[in-house]
Length: 124
Image 1 (spheres, rainbow, N blue to C red):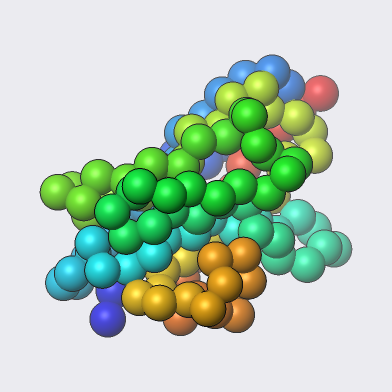
Image 2 (cartoon, helix red, strand yellow):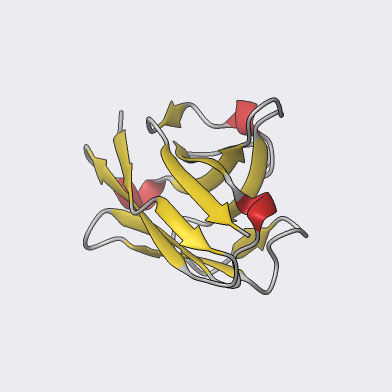
């Protein structure tokens, strides 16, 4: 099992940057695929980014490609989401998720472990 705690959210102006962190506790962090999802008020939770066990492969939603970057440090049991050129439509609660072997990196129901979420608000 793994426990996840996100941090780094906050209020930022459009065009600004934030870096989210997700610290994992428990064993074998490097054996988990890690993902970031977000949920805006009144909307379904949606995929943002995912990273493979070693960090060698990354995946992004079209809406964030070129602006966001996911990375992981297996020595620190932490995954990051660097968010640049933020837009008001990026406003949401951002969740970190983990699973040892999701069938699809893009589907939230494939991830068994979730953090509590961190709020990101982008003002125009």
